[in-house]
Length: 378
Image (cartoon, rainbow, N blue to C red; front, side):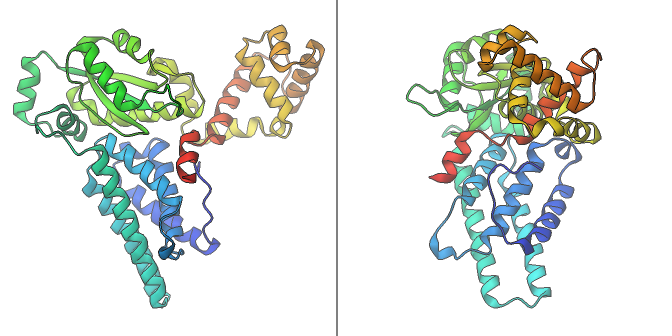
């Protein structure tokens, strides 16, 4: 499990945290459990909620609510109803309350639990209200995005879209770029797209990212040209109306891969990330690849040289320049890497195995980008 921010919860809470996270995950649709994002979010947020139950709430909210807010922002942006989130919040705290009752916990522990639940519910509600207040005009683009992402379009809405020849949408998952005076927010990208296409693009977004729905008739390359004017990372997939909710989850999984592997800003399609996406799915294959580089991982200079060598298309001269070392040193380090993983330099599996293992290692080690750390420190 990848935990995005450090959580310092008492050891005795770890088993309860795992049990609550497991119960929540088991209650989700199987489709939602296939990826990494929801699993990581739920496990991390449950850990934060449990940690809040040990805090003196009179001190006010701490950095743990930052991650809850980040997760709630993503859930809101893909159309998860707030009622669903609150139901799971109550269920999780209810399981912990059962534990407290079974252990005859003092009243103060129950008080802290109730305070923690109130903090979480308030954080989620506030975040949802910021992202999806919906339009003053109930037929506006924000409302349209919410309806389509929730998978509940009315027959009338379907007829209206068909009359406009809108039968497919390109679903965009957007991640905010690093903060700077020149940065463009996801909301500003939504405005740019609407202006460029002369059509109000439906979308739900926050300061962290968002989900936009662009009629497929506008074309991916036109979207790419708009995205190229921003420092944002965007993933796109084109689907029919009934596939929008599942596509939203898929593009956010792909976006997670792109951001964790620090891909440059721009527009990505599934074909651009298919190998990395498949390599990072949970399972014995990923576990084996993670172990493959373990002997090399003890030597940071070898990992750095390997990454540079692969990024430079296996060009020794470029790797030498990038790493500021002599070509003979590059050769020496590469030979050490090959020896440590137990493969010959002439083995055709070598480079593919090293490349795949490096993707898995980088993905597993990466958390959310520095925006999350900045938010938790504020």
